[in-house]
Image 1 (tube, rainbow, N blue to C red):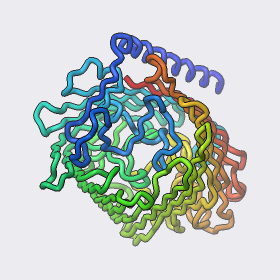
Image 2: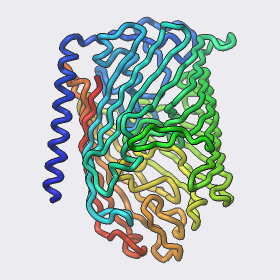
Image 3: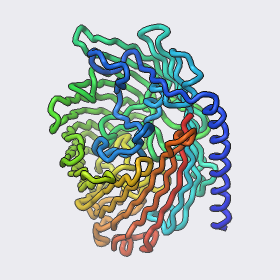
Image 4: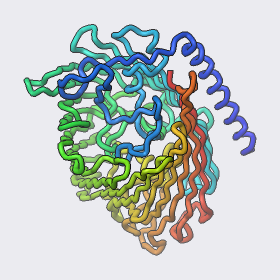
Length: 505
């Protein structure tokens, strides 16, 4: 039975890749333009740029070009977890750019992933599980017609055509053809004579803040948080200083009907960034969530800071981020905190190589309502593959020992390996996301360790440079917690694997 399902999954992937590649080849053969087109009002200062200099207004790292991979990326980021489709589109690095006028940007992206694991780690799924997950995005921008207005539309179709445990009908894994972005932007090149550009957006938004440890948009996993509201961006968070302020209503995701916001729930906040000191870049932020119509009625204030140095070849770098949370959940007072730290070094070698030491701590409590709440965070970078897997949440968790290594043997291939050990921060509290808890504490706190290995390949010739291939394997060496906790899924180690194809056109 398992072999039959796996065979079916492989055939679906091959058919999908073949169909999309064929359509892409037709478009690419017509014209493969690489002409750069810039947003007329990037979020940067108004100093003149060289004609061939990209105007950066986001933290996304491009993976196309002569060097698709780099070991000196922004701390905490990998290409697996951060969207760069918008940047590629605005630089005319997608084939549809060859056919559009200057006032229109269009891009389509399709991703198919097959993943499976055995010997589950949750009470709900104690054994084997597999899934084919597909995400298709249609992104369009209209600009330069009614200056300074800009219109953005993104339609996203998320499905799990081969899934178990009714996951294909869950809002976590499915969201059939819905709006993930639909907003109007008002852009100024010189805000109040300060020399800094400003962008004011209103409508349905996707947001990324910092390293997305609290708020993140498109991700490696199966969920994309969206918000209806307003976002104001002043300055440039890549250079000098930047300010972002937002007021929104989170959107409820429905698998087969249109998503809509939650009228009794509000999410707002602000972030200030400074980049004047290269060895001490600073982010400070405050986020407020007031939830009125959910099972967990959360009124949480989250504040924190991030301090880091950008990685550079032949130098050490670091990152420290601390988050503090207070308020109430289900009318229970909450004070929780989370901390992340890393020290990295990028070696001067023929094959670029980078090594990072990682530390994470998230407070926990016997009462799950008092654990640290991750809000709308991403987890792939520091806690392994997510989606149907995702064994670890940064809540009631400590990982004092962890390493991640990145090697680029050739410019189009990237190898990444990480190994981390995990304990419960409070042994009486819940193992978040698993449905397991031992209030007596007799099961101990050692959850085990996880090895995560992945390979990414971005071919750099002909139309294949629009295609990305990724494969990965993770192994959970289960700790003695699984031998002792009630309703344990078993102490046998978990093996997880995936293969993924992404096509942009």
